[in-house]
Image 1 (cartoon, one colour):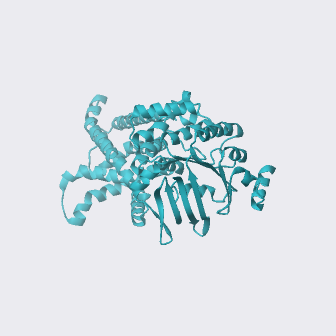
Image 2: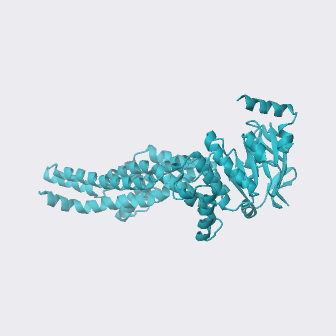
Image 3: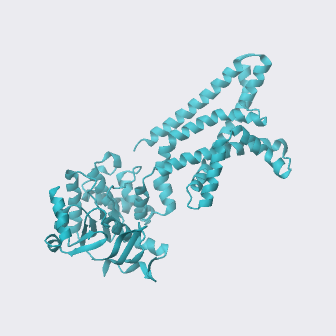
Length: 215
Length: 252
């Protein structure tokens, strides 16, 4: 089987891989902020619950979490959602897992901002929302970019875990072809795909970091 | 009308009483210096006056508008909307500047006037440029804070506080983070403001400067105002604690 044929067969899987990647980022990055705020809340109950959530998300395998998300409607409510639920379950599983990691990254950035910035903003009359959006957030983004890059790169490779829920993403296709053809070539193509994908990610993030380095 | 009036202010951090019955009244155009050893409560007094810290007892008002009143032996703060209005009356210059590092010098000056006070951008920009001119920093409008010396940063911070047109300006040890050379350029700017009749309350360790620029000096120790008066009366006082404090300074 030629390189081109393998590539064309992998292409549909790649589309799925990219969808998982994009949707997970789209949902987990904003969700992470809410989790981070919960983690830093004055309310003890909220703080404890978010801490517990982060602890469970980071302390158990993503693969297991995906299975829990996929099967819980059946075990809890005896609802069978069938294969329709598969893709949403994957996105939900990835999102809640990554939101926990992003939350801790955001928190590290928010807590790194000196108290004086808040006080200066308060003296100048900024509202709490203005203070966060105009003064704090831009500085937080600069601080957390390298850590976020790490997480995004990990996500590219983690997408292959979707096979747990029988989602035929790119790596699953590669395994099927490799088994059928008894060839290592599909794996090489898969490796190349992940590598190039991540190369793009890190180039993009480097550009962003450069853009932020004016101060 | 009193530009600032604080009466019987008390403030404790846990068991430690930092301010013990402090009263301070400032008239328009007055320059008040607050001096005293570290831990005497100077900065806490300033932080209470600027609403960064809440007082336990006592009252606070600016230009006759009450920010804090006393009810049943405790301080009661005005409603947030009223406090927001009162906050427009004063500005504060910090010891370590606290400029916004991601904003250019000009943006540091105009951002609050535009987005908080909702003033037109052209007007705010023009006034900011005049302020920078006055501070001798017109050529730094597009620089970022990290590109400036400490003295320049502090002058930008003063300009930023002035850009909101406060009636009263507070300084919390404005030169304590600066070397003697840079201290001079910042003190010069504050002196200019005094000459322009700006109402100012300055916490400082610069005794010579306080003596020259102030109308009145408060000497604080252990949470009390030990001495209050004109620079002459305070610096020539026989008060033992004051003599001890000045003596230590001179030895250094």
